[in-house]
Length: 241
Image: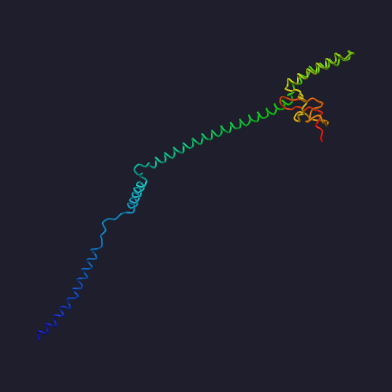
């Protein structure tokens, strides 16, 4: 009987020890959980945090603004740009001065050209007005001789002196026009030349084989190598069958 009791008691002891063991494990887990949480070492104030962030920002800006090796700094770039701007401004001022000078020269040249045009028109008008001055001056002595011839014709009866005076005036006129390049057209072998002769009348004849000048009705003249007035002639032409 005693042995059976002891067998029954063992399980009770075991049963009582189990919860104790569970409690111990729970306490151990709680301890471990507390140990895993970090304990705060120090506290940072808001002012210190702001100063730290500002310092960090300045360091970043300095790193970003710092030029790479071999590249100009920011101040150098600004100075270079300012120098280029000043150079461009100087060039612009020089170009403005050059434009003003060219404009002034153009206006002066235009005014001079207008004066030259007006002077040329005035000279042209005066030329047409006085171009014959030399010719008319040379004609005046011939007119004087005509007056003398007319006066002498009234006192003479035979008319010989008057004729001689008229022949003299005629020779003077021929010499005058010759002086200005005018000469009479001479007939050569009485051949009709349409470029020099103008036929006022014509007559048929069986004795000729080509047109010939039969009679000179009015003398023609050349000025240098150009026709001044054609010769008026009467022409004899071959008879038609």
